[in-house]
Length: 432
Length: 78
Image (cartoon, rainbow over all chains, first blue to last red; front, side, top):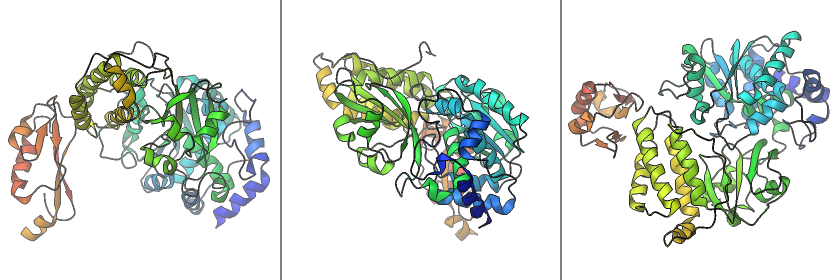
C-alpha cells in the first residue's frame, strides 16, 4: 500500500495531465513540435517516484499488472509478467526498444523525438522495478540526437540512479525483434537469436534482460506516477489505456495520433483529416498485420476484441488506408518482396521460402498467372518455421490479402487491374 | 524406472537457425520428420511415441549441425 500512497500524491502534485480521461498523455499537446525539455517534462507530469526500495518495486509491478499494460511493440504481451520474470533473475539489464524498423510506422520515432524524457523515465523506472543498474536505449537514427540531448540533460540534473547508454538502432526490419536488438547491442548483428533460452533468463551478455518497446515504457512512467485506475480511465476494460497509432495512405493528414484503445476506426481516420478518396481496404497492425475490407472495418473499435472476427488486431498501431484506385495485390507484392529481402537469412524456410513466395505473389499481382495451390502450399510450409516471427508475419499478410482482394484476383485473371496508386512505403534498393 | 520414462512427454525440436538443411534427419526418421520444398525439416511436434524414442535420440545425435534436440516435459528421462 505504501506504493499506492505515493501514487496518489503524484496525481495531486502534477498538472493538467493527471485529469483522467484526457488525451494525449504521451505526446505533447497539439502544436508543440520540438522535444519537451526536462523542465517542461517535470512541469507537465511531476517528478517520477524515486528511491524505490524492494517493497515499493514489487507494489509498482503489481500496479502495472492492475493497469493491464501490454507491450506496444506489436506482440501485446502483459508488461507486468515480463517485469516479474526479469526481476526474479540476478543482475538484470533493461533495453528500451526504439528500433521501429517498420518503414510504414512512425509512432516510436515521434514519441522519442517529442517526449524523450517520458521514454527515459520509463526505462529508468523499469530498471528500478527489476533491480537493474543499467539501461540501454536503442533509438532509431532519426531520434538519436534528441535522446542523447535528453540523457545529457538528466545527467546535469543528476536525476537518475541507473546508468543510461544509448545505441543507434540497426536500420533493418528484423532488427526490432527483441533478441535481434540484444544481438545488435552485443555484436553489431541485427539478427534474431535462437530461443530458448528466453531473454528474461539469458539475454544481453548472459544477463536476464527486459526488452520493452519505448511506448510501453512511456506508459509505465505514467502508471508509476498516477496509478492503475488513472491508466484505465481510457480504453476498454479488457484493453485499457491509450495507444499511439500511425495513420497513413489515403487520408488528408497522415499522422501519429494517440487514441483510446477501442476508438472507432472511422473516427481515427477522421482525426487524420478523413479519407481523400473512397477506400477499399485498410491494412491494420503493420506489415505483419492484416488487410481488411474498408466497409467492414470502418465502424469497428480499434482493439483486439473489436477486430478479432475480421482476423485482424491493432498490432503495432498501424492503420493504412488503401484507396479504390490502388491494387491491393500490387501493394502486397511490393511489401512482401521487401520483407523477403529483409529476412536475416539465418533460417532456411525464411531465406528460401519467402523469396519463392514473393515471386508467386508478384505473379499474382502482375497478372502473369500463378498456381494458387503452390502458393498456399508454401504459405503452410513456411508458417511458424522461423527462429523468429518474420516468416509467420509475412504469411499472415499474404493470407489476409488473398481473403480481402479476391475480387482483384478475379480481375487480374483476364488482365484487368484496379490501379497503380501506391500507398505503402518500402525503402529503395534493399535487394539482397 | 520404466514407468517414469513412459510418463515423460518428449518432443523433437529443431534449432532452425543452426540447421543447414542436409536432410539426414528426414531420411532417418520419416515417421516424425519431413522436408519442405527447400530441403529443411518439418518436425512433428506431437509427443514422440515410445516405440520411436530410441530412433529419435539416435537421429538427434547424428545431426551434423547438432540442430535437432529432444525436449522433455514432465518427469523421467528422454
